[in-house]
Image (cartoon, rainbow, N blue to C red; front, side, top):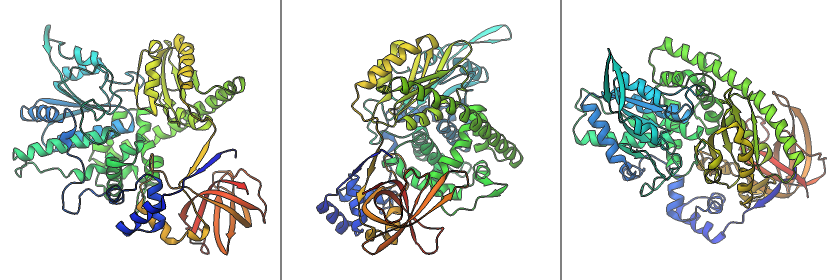
Length: 592
């Protein structure tokens, strides 16, 4: 491979100080220092992501530091006391689905008159649809609590203040209030809602800004519970909810939305993965089953969520109905659960098929674009044949494949394009889209992921502006592998596995550590075929009397026994070879 390699050198004095203060190994302390976790306090918090501190106090920020929390809690409690009908209105992706289910369950348990609603991706599109609000109002809803959407819905919120409902020849004018909870970038002008909770708002004092919707909702539930405690609401007739039980869905939403696994999110996911193992949610248990037998696992990982749970939940909103996934997560009737779980399985198979078709076409298009213009730094690809439910996943794959920011756009029969944007580089897509605003109908999202609505006749202009804006960023389009640390083979011990376990869960901004070792001798090699195809390579390596086993999946270099090589790799416990206790998972290899 033609990757460039970078390896960090730890500040030895800082590492030694950390090792001494926290009684951790030099191996772990150097890793932490290389990740800019160098103070005693930072390292202690990182290595102890528990829900409670040693003194018994909660290890999470006060939820009332979130701007809008006080007003939101008071309005929701008022609705509960007045028996007003509340609708939880969530987005149709995994984060929107999980946050809807969490809040619905919570409000239902504490006696609220509550319903849930998630729009249809194809028929209603992104954001909050006014027609759906009007229908909810017709059914008696007077308070909307949004999850994972709403921060840009100025017009919908304005129109909802005076909704005309026709009843038996008469016209009734009703007001529907909005409590907006969201986590997307905040526009210059925000809706005139009762309240808005979004950690990215100006003058929001909550110390962690990168929560997903499920994390924001968890804070809202903490706030509501606290105020109801003060009112002595939980008096035996209504039990006080144990919010810890909902961290399973908070973790799933956080992982599925590719949030950084640092700070508050690290606490959510660390504890949430444990809750998945112990979950009492029948619908979630159904998703954990394989071949009609429950998967027996002592430990669930980020990978399990990313590849087993999140795709099934997401598939409902992509090619089916997001409401099915929400219903599965809140349902207690086992017969209904079995039917809903089977529906989600079919949705996922359908999603995989559609995704494969779109990805294949998009790769071909991308190759043609780059072939004609080697200097192009971005990709805007579009087709009327592409299903809008899978373009987000395809955009992620295309961005990774070509290592360029990309927009994947599906065009409907009326010439309206729905696009998903992704980047693997340090580029703020939301800021880029602000520069492209003249050519867009609507846009929103995060720094690394965003969505647009565009007229098809503006795609060419958008492509040109997108490219011009990307060129203003200084980034390398060549692939780079950044190693956390350069080490020798004799530094790798079984205790290294224990140290790495202390750094979990791994994910965005806390990836599985990568190591570099130079001048290793190749003692033996064996090619083998993967279960799903592809040629892989097992290598026995030796340096200064220390021998290690390495595996290189889909290897990309012709090496011979006796060669001396440098390798970039991850360290993992070896569960497939009795002779070796550790396996090095090779990311790249080159002759010395």
